Amino acid sequence: MGVIEERDNRIDVICQHNRDRSIMPIKIRLTDETGEMQTYQIRGYRDLSGRGDYILPNGVAVRGHIRTFECKILVFGTERLVKIMYNADENQWRILA
Image: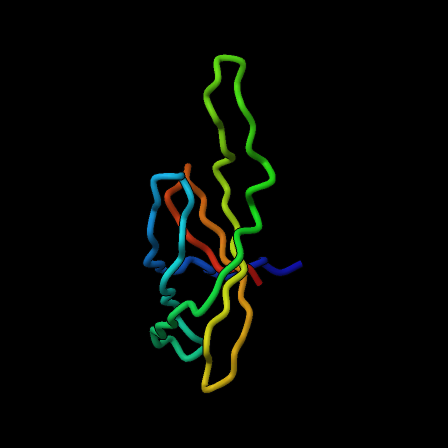
């Protein structure tokens, strides 16, 4: 059996952190299949991760450390949907395949 190679799916993201604890992704930058960096403006997004919030007995609101977003980007004139994920524990963004 051969070695299984994990694809590096880390990406750069420019985002806005709001005072209501929401995150708004603005731009993503990733390496394409030729090894070049490509930047895409996010034209719309949907937060898919807000379902896991809860309140502790002392009244503190808690949110999971993984945030997932479905984003609309424009690629060569065609609108595409991509899913991205933010891991707050690792402070890292990834694109989901």
